[in-house]
Picture 1 (tube, rainbow, N blue to C red):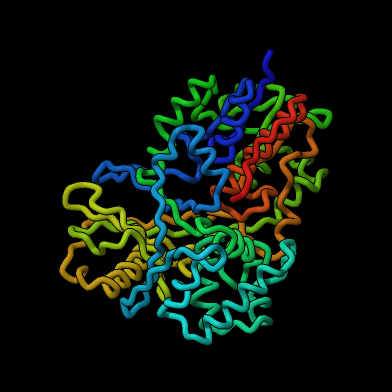
Picture 2: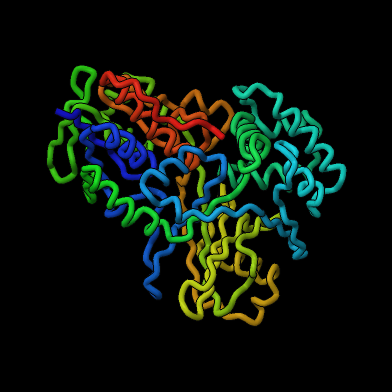
Length: 448
C-alpha cells in the first residue's frame, strides 16, 4: 500500500512537494485553508469589471531552474513570457535598454551596463570593481551588505541607483537591511553566471488562472486529493511524532508523513506552545522578520506606454508592469513598491495619490487620460527579510519530529524569498520523504 502524505498549504512549496511525491507513487492529500490554489501567488476579482487581478505581480528569472521544472511538469510553462530586455527610466523620462549581446557570461551585459544613462563613468567603474570582488567573496559570508559596499568603494549614486534598485526588487528589502550572502547570490547567479540568468519571465495570465485548470487537471490525473477550505487548526504531537492533524471543521486526519508548507507564523500557531518552547528548531522561527510589498493597480482609458515594463530610478514606485488593454477601453498598469515601509501609517488614498502623480510626471499622455479606477493592495508579511546571518534562523526541511517535514521559501533553501526558493523547499521536503521510504531519488533540479 502506498505511503500516505498530507501537505498543509497549496502555495508553490506545497504544490511542488505534491507533484514530486505523486509522480513517485505516494498517496498525497493537499489541505488548503483558502478556496483556491497558489497561496500568496493569488488573484482577486475586480468588483467593477469582474476580471481577475493579481494581488502583486510575480516574476521569475532565467536562473530559476526548479520553478521552470515545476511549471513544465504540470503543463503551465507556456503561460510564462520571457522578456530579454529590461527598461530603466529616470524622472526626466530618459530610458535605457538593458540586454545581453553575443559575448559569453559574465561579459554578455557589459555593453548595456556601460550605456546606462543614470550612472556616471565613476559609478560604473566602481560597480564593475565591486562585482568582481563580490564574485570572489566566499558565498557563505553574510555581514551587512551596506557596510561591504562602503568598504569596497561604492559611490552613493551607485548604491542608490544600481545596487539598491536591483536588490530591493529581488529581495524585497532595503539595502541597509540586506545581508551580503543573498545580495551576492542575486548578482552572481542572476547576472554573472549565465547568459539567460537575468532574463525576466512574466505570466501572461492572472495568477488565479495560472494555478487553475491545467494544474487542477494534473492533480486529478495523478490522484492527488486537493481539499480546499480545509484549514488545519493544530498539529497533534505524541512521542516526537505527529499523531494527527486537527482540522478547523473538527475532523481528525492521520497519515504516515506530513509536510507543512504553511507560513512560519502559521506553523507556530498550529503547534502546541510547549512543543515550540522545547525545540529550538521551532522556537527560532520567532526570530524571522518580514517585509511588506505594496501594489497600486491603475486602469486608464488609453495606453500610457508601449513598454512592457519599466524599472524606475529615483522614484517612489520601483516597477511598472504594463498589462495592456485587459477589457475594451481599459488599459491596466500595476506599480510595485517592494519593502514598502515608507507607506506605513499612510492611507490607501495617499499612496494612490503619490503613485498617480508620479505616473503623470513620467508619461505625459496621462495628462489627457482619465483614470477609470484604482486599487491599492499591501501584503504586510509578503516575504521574510534577508537580513545579515538570517540563515541561522531558517530551518532545514527535516524537523525534529520524525514524520514532519517543513517547506516554504523561508526554510533553508540557499535562496532568498522567491518562487524558486518555494519550489526548491517543496522538492527538498519531498526528497526527504522519498529517501526515508527507501527510494533514494534526486528531486531537486540543477542550477543553470
